[in-house]
Image 1: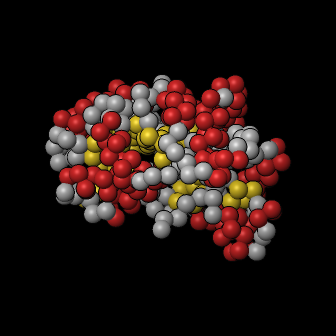
Image 2: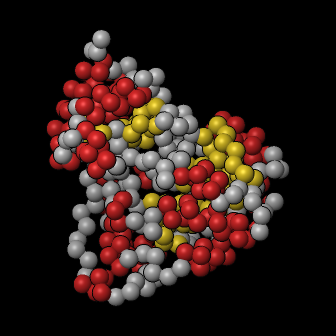
Length: 336
């Protein structure tokens, strides 16, 4: 199993500091989640039937013609390589943008596909090569925040579809980036779009995401994943969050403001970071030492030991968290 952010229990055990004493900014999850109401009692009692209301709410929010609800986009990330192998009856030649959320390359490799990791700047050339059957990328990228124009994505999707291939676009962090989603085009052959409720809405524990794709592929994926994949409470809470336009608008503005604040705070310490409204990343030359220094201060950050390496920070949840991060960064800057 790959290592991810949010593993605070392990940090508490390792450093002997109780969970309550930590500032956890190791993920890119909104630190102030959607204020979900308690679900109706029947949501706990009944087997969860497919929710048309949830699909409608998601299609309206993501501007998609059709979506399949999944138990977090991780479920789709794991299932798509297996579904491709089942349909084609042979491994595929897969290009995965690099650096990227590590589960993408891991799941394609684990299923037996031939995976080649390619820098974002070289993706256009990689897609033009007829050997490329599947291209996987995050837009915006996790962890660098790099963006690919929708026109390029749609052109790549058409090229791949022409030879029976797929373009998988993970838009998990797309909620605060206007004009870059290709969800509206996800009905086109060969294009698969992943969306997450966990990041922007701060509801990672809900385990809810969506896949947009052509109807035959969505039907095949639904059959592969099986029944009752989305719990009743997740359906009700997810529907409410996706329909709450005033909360979404206010939250989007808050996150953009705080994302700029985090970027500026790092710049004050000569850290040239990039990212999204929800996180900042940089290729820290002394990444293990930085991670250790923050941990000793009770601040849990994301250390990347593979790929491009480096450090990623999410947003503090309150002003006390911002002050604590500022003080830790001051100590780091003044070391030695």
